[in-house]
Image (cartoon, rainbow, N blue to C red):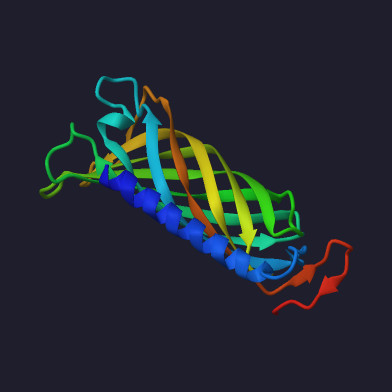
Length: 236
């Protein structure tokens, strides 16, 4: 319950800030289209609630629900906005998860995922811009009970990842807004702490991590293109 409350509070605060900033931009006048970034470097930061579902392997007691419950994720993306509508980039996210009740007292569970993505912006010239991203990568999950030499690392492929969100443009270079997403993963190996190395998971099962939170996007350099095709000066 504490994790849910923390995630909900974070979402509410950031969404409120986005709404206030947007209102300040258009106060006293009707909302107008903004120049859309093109040929620009983008930095994305996000946070929110994340939780895994499904199995690690087919053996009993090897479901994600036996390892961890939900938790908080913090992500970073570095991208290239090639055109107002299209962007590509590298992504990463770290998760601090609540251990399942089946885990020993004092266990910590952490996750991470890194990957690549392509993104489509549907209304890049407007103050509210829906976007969709698709990507893939690699996922890791650490289970760390108290004590020495007993940590376990699970790792495997993030086969596919999709995210959907809204950029609420507070200026031509900054956007804030909500986002949701999910992925499909396949853990391929289990690596216990020590010299033994990877043990291949032979009875693999698909699993997913879902995410809901807020994201800030910052555009650096490039140009700003109006809907008519007029180019505005950027911040190179």
